[in-house]
Amino acid sequence: MSRVSTGPSTSPPAAQALLRRLHDHGVRTVPKPAGQIVEDIVTAVWAGDDARIRLLLERLAPVADTETLLWLRRRLNDDLGSSAPAADERP
Image (cartoon, rainbow, N blue to C red; front, top):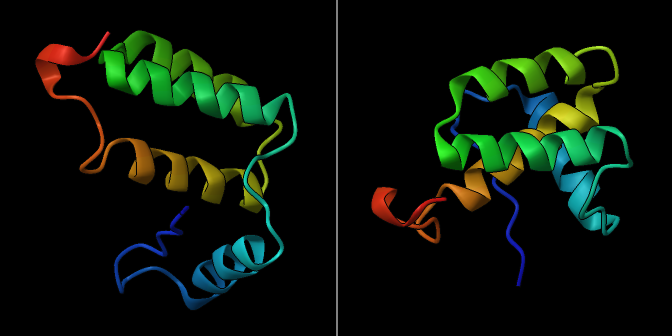
């Protein structure tokens, strides 16, 4: 079962509401090309590749909207939470 992290209580209410709407409508991915960039960012974060993260964020900026940025946040929270591999197990 997927979970939606609405983040800490300091998240703006509008962002929390958008995340809930996305989840309620079954949105589980963001359309390409932004969706692929988000997945690449998550992989780079796991690998600790700061240079690649910066490059990918530069590529994401022109195509990112609120939905994409919230998806990135969710993917990072989901993948880097308790289910993420330990530092010595990451690629």
